[in-house]
Amino acid sequence: MRLTMFGAMMFRPLISAAIGCFVLVQPSVALDLEEIVTARALPGAPQPDGTHIAGLEIQLAPGWKTYWRQPGEGGIPPRFNWADSENIGVIEPHWPVPEISWQNGIRSIGYEGRVTIPLRVSPSAEGAPMRLAGEIQIGVCEEICIPVTLRINTDLGGGVELVPALAAALSDRPMQPAEADVREVACEITPVADGMRVVYSVSMPALGGEEEAAIEFADPAVWVTEPVASRDGGELSVSAELVPPETAPFSIARQDLRLTVFGASGAVDIQGCSAG
Image (cartoon, rainbow, N blue to C red; front, side, top):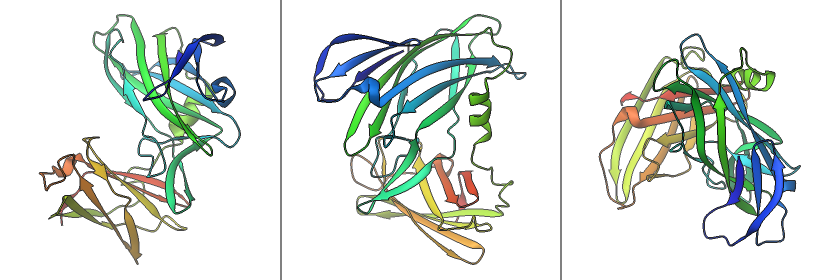
């Protein structure tokens, strides 16, 4: 796996730093990426349902963080490109429950220290060898943010059980609605000048502490504003605006919306909503 800078940053020649199956590229800034972030692929093991659990383990220097799939306004969203893989059908990341932090009124959702991201991989053809190859673009931030590309290239197979880091990351997941006693999820969708407003009404017990939420949309080109959450007894209300590139009202399929609610006792992952 290779770590490189991406975006509009300048490059220096490749330096000889190897971390497992990683090679590091040094950017033209006064920072040593090797001291900030290292990563390794976890080949994992096959599962009874025919899928394969692999993983990406990222280690960050003290004070640095990387981001959840929806990073908040203060983060860089991760991006996956598995175009070079062999005998790979579907790859589904399983994100552990992240931490939420605020700095100067800006929210970030992500991880510090070490994070393992399990990947559930389905083969295109059963019984044939699988190779996971592609690029993962992430942001790492302290006082500044650095976008890096992780290049992964690893064979899947050989393992008979998950390493402890992968097993623990799979357990550290948001609850499903039934586990959190979510009884009803409705959302009202209305047009606004530059897009659409979504207001969730969720009947569920409080998760404790100061609850926060994240709203996601299936199309990553649509910008979702930071949601506002409020609670009245057993009812949680969450609202945000969705702004497409053309900054105009557009059609939304309710199954393309995703709500995650965070609280002191964990998180709950809610896919879709009924008409409000």
